[in-house]
Image: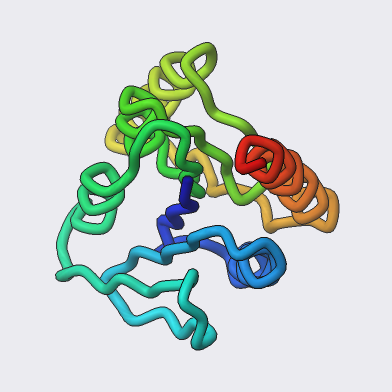
Length: 152
């Protein structure tokens, strides 16, 4: 099992939480982005730089993830694709995206995109709060606990 991070838009605080967790548990952690992401010199932590371009990092994550992996992303279309492959998805705000909720989230995303393309301003997401950070850390710990138990 591995953790794949859609790192182009991943908040710094989320990266820090992931790095600490990977160093503690030794789980494989890969940051995928179209720019270099500095990571500690550790065998289980990688920075994978892909070419610039629309969805290039997303396509690389889809190509590399397998059943049971965890993907960290807030990109709804990417989440949909990796869920179809059997991966689990956690947003940087600690929301679990799965087969039960991804289609409705994809429909809402498409609806909001239609509004934006017609000129209606819908605003962006709120800044990450301390509660968001805690929710992410808690959900990540739950995932890592399950991973640790499965490893035994």
